[in-house]
Image 1 (cartoon, rainbow, N blue to C red):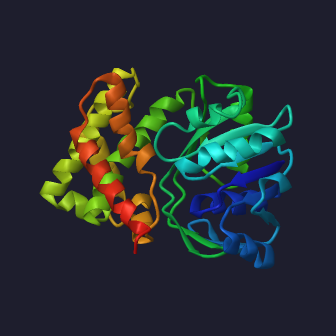
Image 2 (tube, one colour; image 1 turned 30 degrees about the horizontal axis):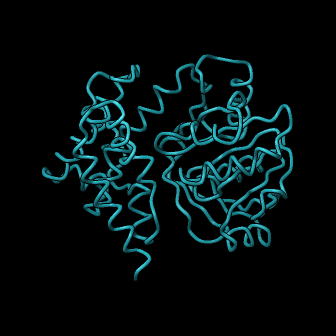
Image 3 (cartoon, helix red, strand yellow; image 1 turned 135 degrees about the vertical axis):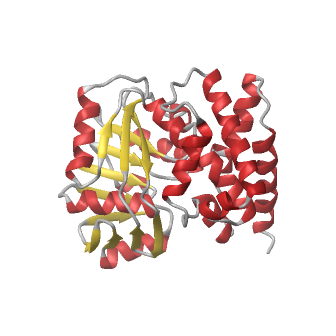
Length: 309
């Protein structure tokens, strides 16, 4: 299978490395020139829970047009990159090409729909990898929990099961789900609970939960998401949102959300797709979201300062 990974940061590089190792023709597409150059020159080093190896057989480029038609396009960009990636992919796709988009937060499907019909788009949720970039051409991950995949409109299909099998055969713990919205919102409530608060207070998940005042704010963020989900008829897989996010946090107390890592690197985060999206949905549904509104305002103000130093 010919597979293009658009956005080969930490997670995208893991996808590219394991897919290439499984024998697929893999194209890594990214705007980070040093990373692309390192992969082309010396291969991609992937280390961590899946082992430690250098994968040589990866085509790397900064130009989407180099890729051409593929069987599968994987969008692993940050939320803001989904639209531009979809715009680049649309003219390349063959009649039987498939797209799977795997992001934090909400709204990826809607961003893709601006540039192509979504009848060949699958949604993915990646949990518990703890991935990080060690340097150009080198990524690490702490675990390999689960890749969840589903149809945008729900249901179980032959193509969904076929694409899921591709991930499984590459070594991923992957599963197909009939109700992907349930899973997206299950991850989303954890993203919102920990991303904004950990970033504002500069805490790991464990440090956040150990600070009563900060954890009270994070719990408020979770309850706002839960209220929105119920208003949108999301069939949450849990009854108690606070118990759910608390259990999630206890599993990785030393983790730092990607939003916090972005701020440590003084680069813009995915605030608009995570805590900021809570505020937007709250306005649409007439539900107050004061915790997420304040956190989003603080984070955006900090990001305005990044370019001034």
